[in-house]
Structure formats: structure tokens, C-alpha cells
Image (cartoon, rainbow, N blue to C red; front, side):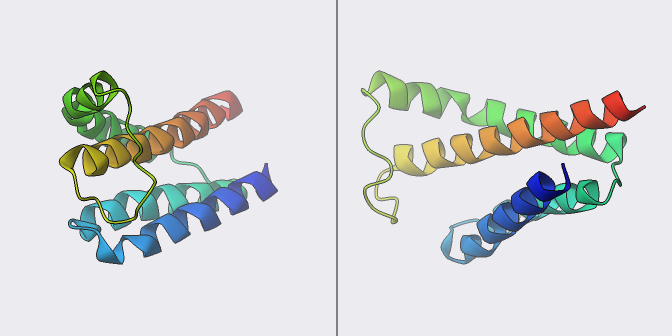
Length: 119
């Protein structure tokens, strides 16, 4: 699991670094950076289930706030959100944010499961 966690730490670090041009970079750099740190610590056998759970709860609550916009995007027929980097329509930004949080939730859930399994 060390290699997988190091790869995830590197990927989430890049995600955090790419937030410099986002309308709300501090929020995204924080969540991505936190997930990177969780994975980095996990690579060396250090997991704190309470911190992981806290980040997971924040991600879920934040994600729930974006569900209506994500559903609107689906109702629109799921138009392309990756064709251009600049989000010219609100649904592009909200859908990307929802999917980014979904990725965080998957990784945090996996890390929480591993921390509980180890106990």
C-alpha cells in the first residue's frame, strides 16, 4: 500500500497546486492538500481515523450542497465539462467541484476503511 499512497499523495498535491486560477482556490487547495497529507502519512503507516472521518464529513456535507447543481447538469443531458479549462457556465464549475469532492470522498473512505481494518 505504500506505493499506492505515495502516488495518491503526489496526485492530490498536484490537484492542490492547480487551484491557483480557481475562483475559490483556498478551499480546494485545503481539501486536496489534506487528502494528500492523509495519503502521505498512510504511506508510512500513520493514520488518524478521527481526522480522516472529519475530512470525510466535511467533504460529504460540501458535496451535498452541490448535488442540486449536479442533478441539473445530468438533466441537461450531461454536456461536456472538460472541453475547456475556463468554466464559462455555472454548471461546469459546480459539476467539476462535485466530481472533485467525490474523488476525495472515495479516497478518504478507503483510508478510513484501512484505518479501521488495522485496528
